[in-house]
Length: 422
Image (cartoon, rainbow, N blue to C red; front, side, top):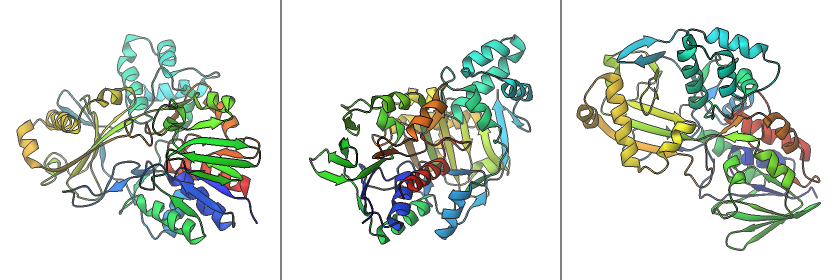
């Protein structure tokens, strides 16, 4: 009989581990606090929307082999993201052929850096002159918007390794990322894996070769090993939080390592209109970057769906925490009205459906995805080592590689844990 495995969390990391280990004939039980599978993958079709939208992960950032392999096995397809990147400032539209003047110099200085520092310190030390004001602003916005990072905490070496790959092709998945989730789920259950949803683990009691997961309603699940795949926000939460997990005995060194990884947040606003009015401005709009309250927007190109997605990442997103959805949608429309120089009322009259996703206030994630702080690399080395060959960690925050913060990162991390156990 192969060793029994508990997997805490049914995002793609948990489901990937479940599929791999159940295929190797381990008895596997997955415990998921939410009433659905997929975690920060959330393909949905809210009322009024003509097609499914992605409230969570949306893009494939490059030709990421494991993601594409699973998508192919699932019978799904993917298509390149097309369209122009346009910067809007003071009502003027400019195609962003290059990121900004001085960007090459910034990347060159990053490449030459011998010791790590935060982005804030880096910009202050090397680009403090007045002529670099726009460059500093652009670097901060990119770190916040794309990496959901705090410039006073994010590692320059981490950004350097990631930004070097930003010219790679991006893809979308017609039909949504949920196809990968469903494929992993069906493969796991076909192998005998048992998945429990609405099952919040509050305590993990363990000793070498034995684990008990105790749920909020007092159920106890036992196995010989456990893989913890819940988001970093949940692992860092105070034990009083509804979805936080306590370990008995404590795993202090691992808890300290988790605190060395950054975890940002995102507000994502999806607006559907009666028709794609933006085609009157430019038929090839892919992404819009502005200085509005909700600064970043994208279309569905190459599809012609009348949907715009707004994005606020990093520290600026925390300002939306206590706002209701109606207020956020109003602010989104105001941002778009200024970008397109049209009236708010005209824009509102065209709106046919809307949805707001705030990952910081989602109790099952408490944030969006991870980024590198100064000591993240060392922390991940520890977190990728099992505790007495009994407790294992997996997920995008645990992954150590160039595709951080992605679905691929979660899949790779789980695949590696699966190899360690099987």
